[in-house]
Image 1 (tube, rainbow, N blue to C red):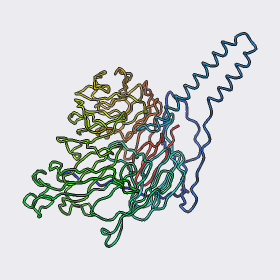
Image 2 (cartoon, rainbow, N blue to C red; image 1 turned 120 degrees about the horizontal axis):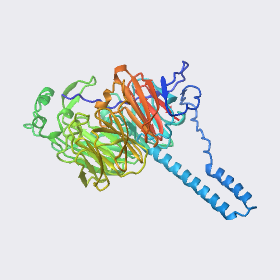
Image 3 (cartoon, helix red, strand yellow; image 1 turned 120 degrees about the vertical axis):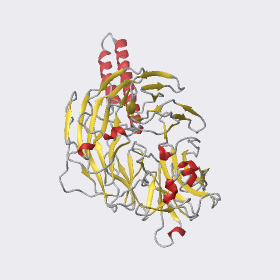
Image 4 (cartoon, rainbow, N blue to C red; image 1 turned 30 degrees about the vertical axis):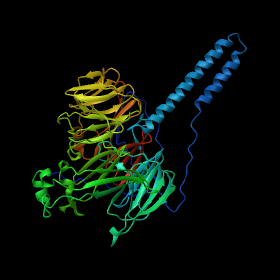
Length: 580
């Protein structure tokens, strides 16, 4: 019997100065083929966010004006050469030099902009990560990472929403919230790659507490990423379930329909009876689910869809659960589970299992496995979606995944398992990688084959504009030319001495993978040594070791990127890391 997976918890963060000794994140560092990093400053900054004080608004120094400096240098040189006989040559030389600098500057800006929004993109990975700021949690109450936007992490801290500078950890703003408030869209912990959704608006929902709570209105507060409250309203109870939705929206789920006949689903059906037989036989009929996305601030409807009951989704969502986590009965109109992810929304309940776009278009189809069996839909950087049929891990059977258009109307079978890159440098490459048998196949946007490489791949940790790294079943890491499939390098010694139990899990196999376009950095837990994490950084073009570091984490957590910066989240703290 499958275990019920708890809804991802959220936590509040108590930011207090730490009078103890700070410890360096890097317990041991080894480097080759790379000069020593610049000297570190003082230890990590522990930030005290006094909600009574005015929020500081630090102004960052202006970036160096490389173009202006070269212009002045080129102008002086032209002035000197005006006295000679090679005026024309000097002007041409200056123009060429200036053009090269302008192109280089524009290219750097484009690269930085792409890395800020790319999954796993980091602005600078030239050195091992070190802690620069930390916020700590207090108590297991609603809170945690809520959203990101342009260098900002939005977190819930007790009964306040905070805008935290991801580079420095300083608080830019705070907004007081009522008690018992949950904000979203939140952080996705269950897709295999950890990320916080980008949002221009954060939606907070306050649930009434105490006697008669079900009959009282729920309060909605909408805050933009400048810390301005842009809307508040009360939502009258109507039997619907409300959750923060995408793009400043509010999702409203309502059970509809006549329900099953008593003969189809006996009222006396027990949990044991539900689990003992075939799901379709146990609950052959049920209720439909109406899903509505409305503007959280105004209540205006954006779209509405009705998801019909499906007896083949499995019986587990037809069980109601007590507060201690035990099953206490069968409920055909119980809680609806939702996941708001990048450009997708998943809803699950008794007989309900549907993947929708943020516009309400259906992405799954009849005949797909259930989400509880491993099916999922993910947004692609180049647009559209990939529907994955599950069966992850190196020993799982290879199913045929498919690409789905942005509106869900068209799809194309891939004939194998789609290899989703865990991190990229943001370069626009319309190349899809698929595993067919023991071969990696590269396809272009039309589905035509570009090249093949005989590697039994289980994951693609890093993909850049020129190189893709592939992890094989034997744990070897291969660097392949993205344009031709030629093997540029192979490392079968990278994880020697590390108990990489994580490499049996997919589709991303590693706890984290990151790139700045030049380096590939992997985070691999050592299950044989408790909570030890190993970082390995390679030159993505040559496979050469650049640096490595071993860190110890007190408890489970996740590394993710926000606006090109590394952040580590755990149930008790958020840590900002610098790797430059």
